[in-house]
Image 1 (cartoon, rainbow, N blue to C red):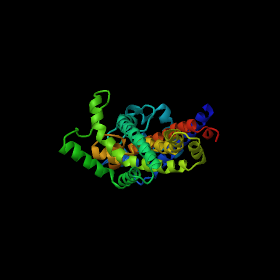
Image 2 (cartoon, rainbow, N blue to C red):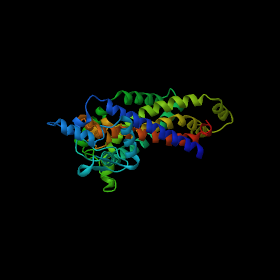
Image 3 (cartoon, helix red, strand yellow):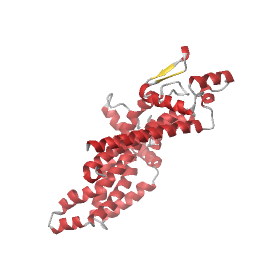
Image 4 (tube, one colour):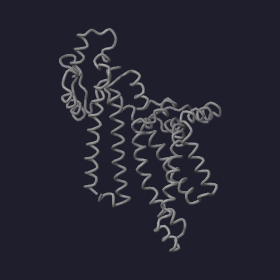
Length: 330
């Protein structure tokens, strides 16, 4: 298991390094000059050249990639002399828009996405798997038809529409909940929970449908396997066959999907949800950085999101290896 974990970590570091290189090359492929963007309106050529030197843009591409990689592990200094600005590790650059450290900005938004991802993923995983498994066991019966209909509704309904309906019903009309928002759990756990309840419900409605449908299809395949028929022929109770044998076979592919979805949520994938409920997460930061053409923040959020997905997949691979020992030997 240790060698398997080491192989997966080395593979993840390689992927992160490749993503970093691609992100940096895309940074230089954009038609706009980063120095002009950083300088703003009314700049002189001398000032643009000065900014280009301070940002290290007058160096070769490989040298800049080396500086970028060095900044991630040891920090870096932009400019020299009295105008030098130090960026501590892990350095993702300095924002052109407000001159703040990009890592500090992204990290300050991370608790929002972590709260959103943890609450919603736990709910739609448990509910989706339970509903999909129950629908497979009762194939063709009312519960199966309800699960299929719910899956169709969840997949075909835009999340911003669900967000608007939830806010109108529970906040404006019935006034059962406060408006959605984020309060750090360390400050007020009750406000943290009530502020995130509606965004969690919106994400659960969308993702529950997909997990229920996927679990149903994989469970039906597993129920057709010989070892399930053997278990039934031995006279094992239906509950044991379903929960011990069918669930274990059906849950393995679901683990892979939840890893990718959870990593994407951590990286700010719930952009529409954050925008609909006004949550200050990484997704909202990414949208604002695109609107401001703030390239360092765009790079920082992109790299952070990619790293979250890669690390989440490492965790999934480890769990996958624990569930199925054959994976560790592959």
